[in-house]
Length: 126
Image (tube, rainbow, N blue to C red; front, top):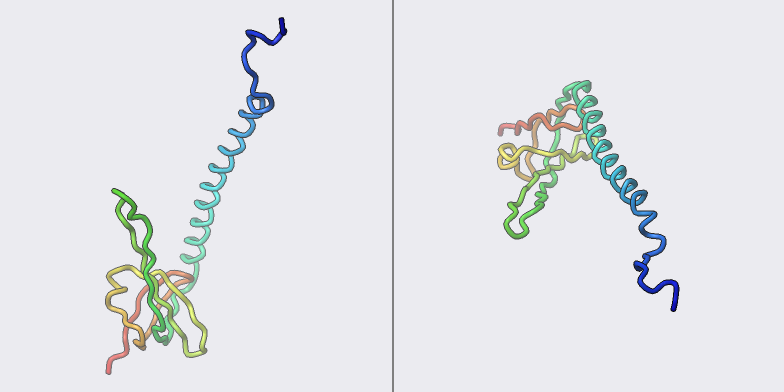
């Protein structure tokens, strides 16, 4: 009779490594969340410490980014506008929906921003 008969089946290496693998994945996920939070806090602090800059600019592009919307999950949209300054430099900003609807490609005006934060856009009056 074989000495293995009646013995429980062994899966080899995996059971001994499971706690290590689980712990590593857990730490990776927690580390990712902490990294995203720290990056957001640093970005907000930089914006808050930046001066508010009014600059002549033209709206050269608008775009919408939609995420979600699968099955019963509702979709979420983010709105962006790209502005071109008199120097030819371009910068894209997240724009709140209420402002996004008032901005049209080709509009000229005064863009006010603080770091990477859109503050306002006032079209030039004709």
